[in-house]
Length: 346
Length: 253
Image (tube, rainbow over all chains, first blue to last red; front, side, top):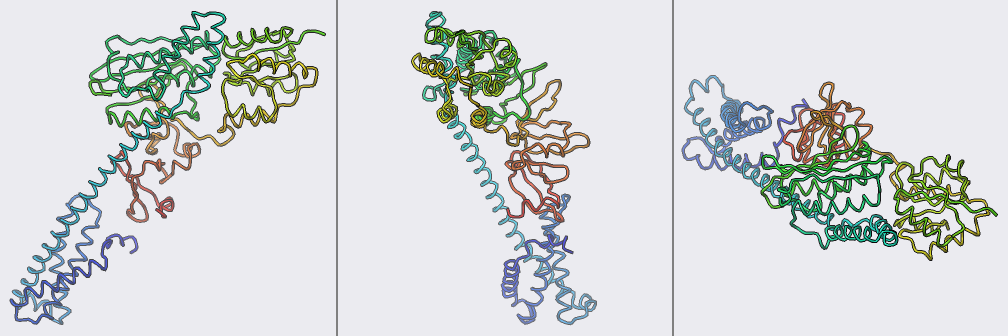
């Protein structure tokens, strides 16, 4: 029995009171049509009303997908009125067979009124429920929108707060310091790269709008610095058609992939490795990918904060039409790619 | 008295050259007998060159400076070299150990060298405790339980790496496990049982014999047929069944 309790979900005291009140009011409004007393009619009305109420509740809770719930509920009212009329007869101590044979008109009137009032009540109920549902949907859509806006804001804040790593800065400066004494032209080139990288990476200087070319310049500056620092351990190539360099591209995403390739790919490896940046456009999608031949990602390795930030911002900027995909590269290394629709502002 | 010998370990070639030239200026008698680009083969280097002194960069690939110091033990004096690392510097100060910062400051390097000259005849101090403390500070996650962070799944001829926080739920599907994310659905061979052991239990809950859900992706839970419950998800239309054995996890909600 317990497992069928859900059928009666919603059969609240409030519902019983509402049905009772409706029955009392309905009886009052039609009592002048009848010879019966108010009390006698009210008993019939309550029997019909309660029977309909119980069946209506069950119809609303039955788990089935074939018949629309509303049709089931109206059916419940019809059956409820029929059953209620019989129950009313029993309550009043009448013979049911005789009731249908001799007082058919009265029975039909009772049932008809039950169905009529029942349908009005059900219609009101269904409208109210629909309204509540619309409200809830609207609310859900609204909160979804707020959530997205909040996520974007958080992603932007995290981006603003992302610091230039002191470790990177000081190591680079130590290299420059040495080159100043031993190879001044090279020192000057390295400083230039550092300045270019810092100009793009300093939170205050980051541009809200940028294009692929500028993001590539920043990545090149970063890779140039690392090539000097790591010596023969790092080689890199940028293979991007000039035609694509003017395409809009969100800021700081490419450099995050490049930094990951150095930090998690080449740097932890004792072997020499290479990083290649490529881009292609196909059917309105611009795809940019960074390939490294480094260590690869271990299943329990962390450090996905930068990636989570990219994903969050892509979702906020382009919805489902942009994506970030990380793949293993054979025989070792990682390919990380970002795909965005072209033609929309980044 | 024979010359004091030293080995320099740093993965950046220019910084090795720089330290070498600086040392030549502030401590001309010191002989740098070997350079290493990572901490591997410390034993071999000790055997072959027998230096009294190591300059170890902390951050190196393969075997880093801390691991190298552990391998050296009390067989030589160690000076740590680091660019910027607040935690490391704090630990150095507390442990009164020799360290130099990059970029090098010549006066500071000279001071370190002066201290080393006094000490070089003595037995090298044990660094074990300090190294452990440093290791804990620099890589705090090491030692604790590490959870699965990436799911590897074949997609066509490629192996895709999916961060676990992207996964909405895992569901066993005969001999495979379905991995469902916002944008994709892939199959992996790792069974639910193994995933359960490896995933972060605070984030991934088993809700059914065949299902693990990312609790961050649950939109709502409602009572369903019998003693089960039903989970609605964010970003996915389908619902998940919580079987009776697991409904207690949602009782207080």
